[in-house]
Image (cartoon, rainbow, N blue to C red; front, side, top):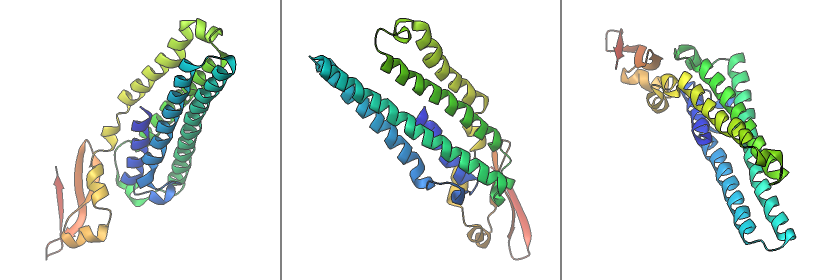
Length: 219
C-alpha cells in the first residue's frame, strides 16, 4: 500500500509539471521510499530470525531491538514522505504551475486523500512499534481488539479513502503528459497540450497546419 502511495505522489508531480517543487527528484522519489520499506522489512525479518534462535535473555533482547529498529526505519522513511508531500503541496499552492491550472482532474482532492491515508498508515506504524516494544505481556498484545482497531481497521480505511478518490481519475493522461513535457516540440508537430477532463485526455489550444487553425481532439 505504501509503495502505491509513493508512486501516486511522483506521478502527480509529473502530471502537474512541478518537478522543481519536489525536494526529491521525481525519478528517484518512489525508489528512495520503497528502498526504505525494503530495508525496514529486511531488518525486521533479521530480528525475527534471531528471536527464533535466541537461547538467552540477552540474545532475545538484542533480537527485539533489531525488530524495533526495523519498525523505526519504516516510521522515519514514511515521515520523510509526509514532509515531502507537505512541501510540494505548499509550493504548488503558492506558485501554481501552468499545467496545474489546465488539469481539470480533482488533483487537490487527491492530495487530501494522500494526507488522510498517510496519517492512517503512520498511526498504524507507531502502534506496531509501541505494541512490540511493550512486550508479549502488555495489554496491547493480550487484547485482540487493539490489533483490529489500530491495524486492520486503519488499513481498511486507507482502502476506503482511495475508493473515494481513485488516483486513476486524476492521473488519466499521465503517460501522455510525461512523454510530451516540451510544449514547443508539441507545437512544431502540430499536436495539442494534454488536458485531463472527464476521464478523457483532450489536446487543445496548439496551432496546427499552414493556415493557423487550431485543432482539438479527444480520445
